[in-house]
Length: 309
Ligand SMILES: Nc1nc2c(ncn2[C@@H]2O[C@H](COP(=O)(O)OP(=O)(O)OP(=O)(O)O)[C@@H](O)[C@H]2O)c(=O)[nH]1
Ligand SMILES: [Mg+2]
Image 1 (cartoon, rainbow, N blue to C red):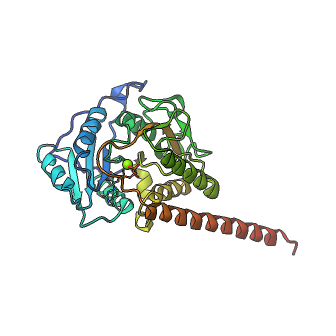
Image 2 (image 1 turned 135 degrees about the horizontal axis):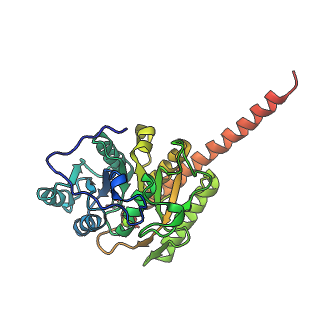
């Protein structure tokens, strides 16, 4: 059981039970949910994003992890938090990368006993309507195989149906562009091709049966993040998402993908760069080669041990 540290100063309203919860509201405790939003120059996007999260997950807290945005995003969120007890901000000293922003946000949330930690971009690309389904998927409140509110039907990834907790509830739910029912809106062909090809490379090289391993819209059960060695995660950009998906799978937790409609940002500037793509390519290739080397070594050991004495 997680250690719960109730925030006495900011009591939260009770969240409604999911509409498709057959057990009813009384039987299911509301999971304490933290939506972690990394920001770098997102001044025009952050307020609508917080509002959209509130609409869909009224009981959730939001943690903005800001890297000293030159446009004053951090100060703006600080101001908003003065009148919003469910909004928190973690200021960092400079642009230290998406991966370490999430790790800092996860640590903040785990220390405070949240049950579910959600990743979401600030730029409005991720549909807030799918938040209840993502959270429901990792808490067992929404049966992902049969569909869920805002998320359509879920797609389980490969054979990771149960996970090490023994039940059928996945530890990680991904809002996926590339499962049936998922889509992208207003994305240039080149971005779509890059994402599709990148995910194909990941899937084949790492034997990771996930269609959208680079997706940054996801929910983790806290238990999963506690089980992983977050200090060992050094990926900075997109490959942080692949890294975390691999670690979740390798730790024995189930992964599920729910279809989303991903929209191109309408304000601000993308932080995607060649360096981020290069880092992902390099790290995924190294992980893939290591995996192949382990398999070859495993076969060789198998041959030696089978040899008659
Ligand atoms: N704290 C922090 N946040 C970052 C950093 N880099 C990007 N972000 C945030 O991470 C989220 C995703 O970044 P985007 O620029 O939207 O990149 P993307 O979604 O991968 O790419 P696009 O599809 O082009 O938007 C946004 O909320 C950014 O503000 C960083 O170094 N530090
Ligand atoms: Mg974006």
